[in-house]
Image (cartoon, rainbow, N blue to C red; front, side, top):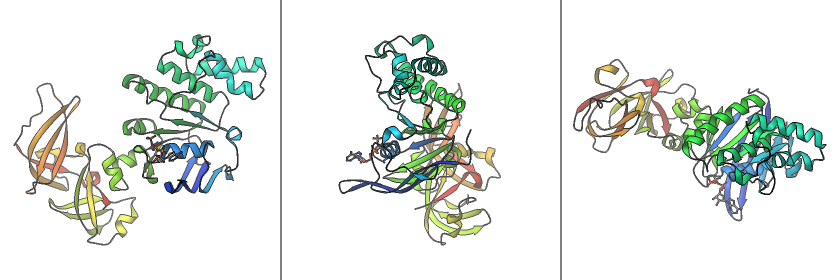
Length: 367
Ligand SMILES: Nc1ncnc2c1ncn2[C@@H]1O[C@H](COP(=O)(O)OP(=O)(O)OP(=O)(O)O)[C@@H](O)[C@H]1O
């Protein structure tokens, strides 16, 4: 359960290696009990953020606060955090129970208490009967659960997870995603989870922090980041979005027009005051998802409408994506998503179509 209380704050944190600045004035406020995923392409600085919070690296400038107090000078073992690494970092010569209890042992906790807490932690990750095994005798998913039990047992305030599921195959990865989420809800500990996988970030997070090039591009709920991208980068990063370039027109309440080669489109701007404030004529994109488009009469009455021709169909299992050359401009292709049917979708290449979409499903990002 997330509270409004702040647990951790990064204030204007920058990090350079030599002359290269890899993080630039990062501000991030983490609430107590929330699950945040840090999402971004390779090299965007995700791991560096986690390593600075964990104490493995120091910021070049800026502050990291825990409960409002600066922890920059606090060594790793004094921070009430635990890290789960991608390779799990289990001790191969120790049993599962010894691996899980290790953190308590080095803290001088008595054996009887260690045994009891190891039992509880293994129970939580459903590995009680594996206590006497060695890591080499476990599957990848089981090793992952041992690593999690080892992180949980010291009752940290915050668990840092660096691509912990990257080595697992897709099915196991999905199982572990729900497993991790369930455990996080049960123990009510704050999780900061690094991934480069959009679907994983959406499936797990209370809030997603999207990074690119050492900057936070957007921090918001999965729904916000998906349907209300704050920048062109975020709009392009999440899947097959349609982006149509144009110039901003007038504002009308919670909506704004954009003049494009497809005509004038109406977009929602509620909750994004910078879009109401941007000058008329500014370069921008209308952004709308393939699943927001409906075909022909089924969407009549929607504020936005464009005619086009189907150029190709792509079967993708549960849905089929259609490419549509829109308007008279050969350069504008839109993607339309239809539910697949056993008899195939009722569309073929060269079909003339009219696409409709609602203003509420059409957002703007500045160019
Ligand atoms: N110790 C280091 N010395 C020099 N450069 C580094 C060091 N650690 C990271 N970098 C650089 O900092 C940038 C950010 O790296 P980081 O590992 O934080 O990215 P990431 O988003 O986690 O990437 P990935 O998804 O590939 O793990 C990269 O350009 C990387 O090469």
